[in-house]
Amino acid sequence: MTRRSWVALPPLLLLAACGSADPGADDAGAAPAPVSAPAGAPELEVEVVLDGLDHPWDVAQAPDGTLLVDERAGGLTAVLPDGEARTLDADFDDLFAEGETGLMGLALDPAFADNRRFYTCQGVESADGAEIQVIAWTVDEGWTTATRVADPLLGGIPVNAESGRHGGCRVEFGPDGALFIGTGDNAVGTNPQDLGSLAGKVLRIDPQTGEALPDNPFTDEDAADRVFTYGHRNVQGLAVRPGTGQVYSVEHGPDRDDEVNLLQPGADLGWDPVGAGSYDESVPMTAPGAVPAVWSSGDPTIAPSGATFLDGDAWGDYDGLLVIGVQKDTGVLALRLTEDGELVESFRLPELEDAHGRIRTPVQGEDGALYVTTDNGDGEDQLLRVTPAG
Image (cartoon, rainbow, N blue to C red; front, side):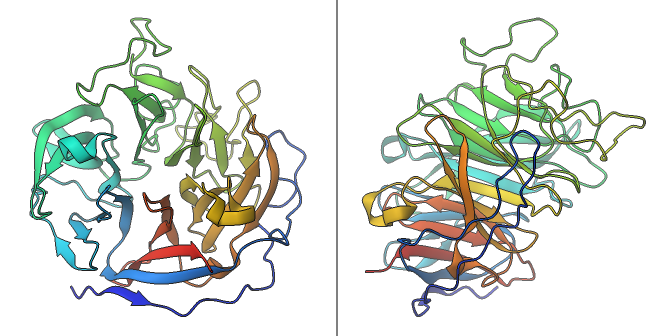
């Protein structure tokens, strides 16, 4: 595989504002009519940090500026501050990579500078069959070798062993140091509402032990104590709003609606696809009586994925936006939210609209830049760096 790093692209001129793909709708949580990018929006510059990737799933930036990126079929690559790209020596011999499942979410420990610890969420072939696990690793200071140190930190997350469908899986640290894990429902209709299953949930655990935190919402013996919220279809993104305790999930829906949700302890987000059959995808993402979504795509759906908040004065009118990767019609969706998490407006970032194909994950780095992974396959994927011009 050929990989090149830090190949600069010329700054892209601000294009005519693109409306969001989500039509106006009357149901709770639906997006308002599409709006243009704000008049004062900054021009964005886009650079290619790394190419020759194949389905990169997530990216994180260490305090020293090194970027760590993973690929769904297995493998970790470090891009050093001088631009050198280095494949880490890491054991993925037991990786279960089928369909949508493989090496997925990635997060650095908040104390990474001291403990060199990071976490992955991945499919695993275990002695009892395939499952999804969260694994804790450490990486040496020279960025050459990743070593498993909690294998697994958390196991027993169900996977669809036949197809890999709806495997999730995103990991994200909350502001209190808890590790959140967004899982998929495995395309099994009973999973999202089954509090005893870890599938179709957002979980909350102690990152050192893998155990449930004592203030988690479920303590009943019939419920999994690691469950934070339930009624999810396929959590593809988790984002923490800076300066708040708010955690948002991003989910692929059926043909009728995708969703962004503001998570509350113990909440039912409403996916209940049992219906008349074993997996009825004609039902809405949010059943009556469940917590309404912050944003819904309506029909057509856009397959939203990873998400992050833009934070910093350098972003100008983009400061505070929730930006989300789009996989179905390619680009980055931006949502402006009130302090309470109500939707104000939605639009697309013009410089990334239909410019690089499917977008899997945007992440704001330690340096304030937005790092973006594409998801087109066949070794044609890239890691991008997006910054405000000037």
